[in-house]
Length: 213
Figure (cartoon, rainbow, N blue to C red):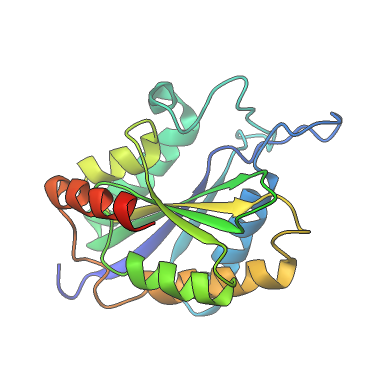
């Protein structure tokens, strides 16, 4: 893998929102974080694609219609676009890295990072840096195979991480979100990005995490 340039793929599968409802229907903060990450990578010249939950006409793809982070999403145009970008990257010799963005309604933690099979080595450093900057309000947990995007990334030997941002600006301010995104960019570009964990190592690490955190 040495010498291969990185191409960042940012997915926000639950960011399709209905503004007319009076209750939460989407991961709106995930879309905000995805756009911020995209702009940060673009600003420093790192090739990057952003996949918000929208169809070809810019209409929101609602989670109630199809969950783009579950196996049925594999046949959707949205996921095929992600696949085509990965295939193109492989064809031109670029290494894909996937940042899968979500958000959650919670009055406690500011962020959660999901460790997944095939997680890249800088993740622990990323967690430590984020947790320090966000005053100990970041949780590192083990993901599950239900998370289709990161699971598929693992099968394709693509480094990936699922990032959860707090939905409430009263908990995770805009300034904190920007700081978090800057930290994520820094660690995504770590020289060890291509060093992968095996599934067995992942299980061992997750067992350790459950005992420590």
